[in-house]
Length: 495
Image (cartoon, rainbow, N blue to C red):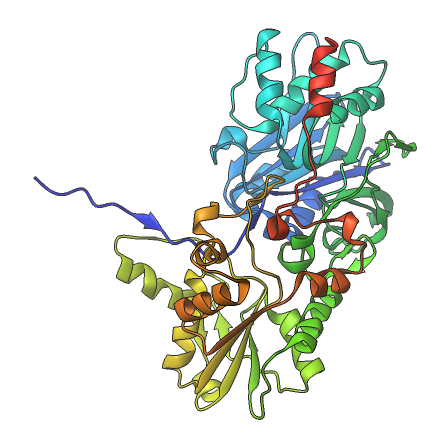
């Protein structure tokens, strides 16, 4: 009997953001926006690679939704886009944390019943109390086809629409039920787009011009707006609802006071370097992370080069090199045509596949003392392989630097970290008597000559926001959500 071969995917040593969202509305009904949404999603591709989707409202007030697994250009082909006619629409790229990777969990999520006007939603984040809400909705007869939190939000909107006077009131009440971190864009068949930001996930507003017609654009990141030749107007404020109608009626309403808890990993890794988040340049922030680490540096180097892990370590490595006056060089080259995960039948083959993604430049590395810079160290597995690549290329020494502090806790807000047991810092701190001893054990495992992380204080200073306005839970274990408001609204019979 032939033995069944087990195929295990390589786990790249990076966290994953959940999703990217965009909404586009043209004042001129003859100007169709499907291609514009496609281009915006291409700019947001880094936020999710599992699936992509689009919803468009046509002239007959019908919402057409198409979604498919794969990258944006794979899922939304030109043949598909040519069939989606309409001047208002929303789009989504997915990397799932709540719910499986099944196509049923892809977005936008379209909802339509005889009791509720048709609508579609694009959602980025994670609702920590969605099992509670789902159970309550189930007792009201609601049936669910997916195991994700987006369908729960859609059912809440549908339930609340029966008692709310309008969509703003509906969205205001629905978002008060949701614990967690999220941004959401809602599309109605009447030609309206509504957007809400809870304060942890980014969301911004801008304008652009298409065929002489002004567009309003709401997107996860400003890069989606500027890549369309548009102009960023501002970030959506935490707790704010924005309403744009197809005739460009614009309404903004602060529905409740929200204390923002900005995700630090947007600045460290997730967001694209050319984006502005809450008026802060992502690239310049990362550069400052590197500068701050150079100021905290414990080692002194008389002859060394700074080498980034491409592409995520580049901005911080530049800052480190500027501050420490150490030469910067591109000692690792990245194959941009390799997908983020591989399937390989053996451990040896999985190890070799890393070389397909990264390769050391021997003429730069050989005989040099290398300061290897990356944005974070999660499991430590990929960093170990990169250190080995540099040694094989002739590096005299390899000093590893991380522009984020050690990741020590799981995230419940839409960032897909590995389980706590897989985090290299957690594994080592559990075997240690001190932070310093844990760092030494990590250094030994990854094979580096020295290892240093940026401090939490250095991180906060670089982002330049008050500590109380940042979510640092993955670093210090201080979570800010509660389910008290959920219990309150469930108990008064509103849903």
